[in-house]
Picture (cartoon, rainbow, N blue to C red):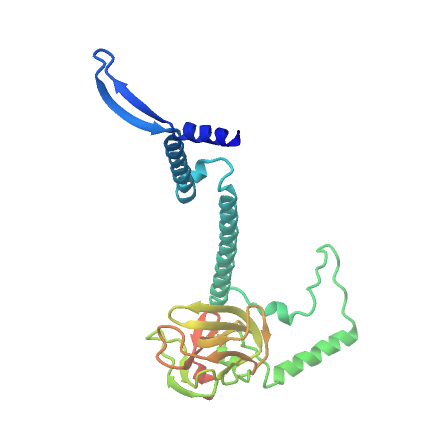
Length: 292
């Protein structure tokens, strides 16, 4: 019995049929095709497989996938979030750089003195205009007189300090910023507002006075540069460095290593330090105050 069922099944599968196309008016045979159930099943399976492969390829490898709801939305969202965060970071960095440049310009122009807040240990005392001033005692008056006499006859008293730059700067003990040989002097006519000191690569660059780092920048022409604000609206500038060891806001003492000599920037032709001194927005010749 099983053999008979198997034989009938094989005959059914292998049975052939003729597919004929006839002219309805003349009954003329136009086209005929001999088919079996096996051939039809293989043909339909092949067509379905090809369609599935083509559809999947179109969805995966073409932008068509973004038109399918839910497909590719995660990648889009992650990309948008990453771009948004990067934009915020760039905006914050640009704002900080603009503020830094504005602060440096104000200091170079003599509009502000960044060391004023450091020198003040206490806040100024404000009084009401309607409050009567306290009367000084005899001891206070005597002390004031003694101080005035000391200032009047002291050789170190700077009565004309606001007008005489040399009087101010001669009271400072400037330190040579690097051990080397001066190669190019100060020349305001050629806009060379400092001196060049040839030195070995990575030679320590030291702060010439106590101060606060107000800017650390990189410029295509001057390379790695660091700006230090000192008292009396005095600024020292160190350019063409190989490395910077201090950042904005760091307080440095005279002799602290703040950078390393390098050859950075297109204007540099060899390892050296370009050193500048500015006072109230005006460049000064460092050789007038420092022995190199």
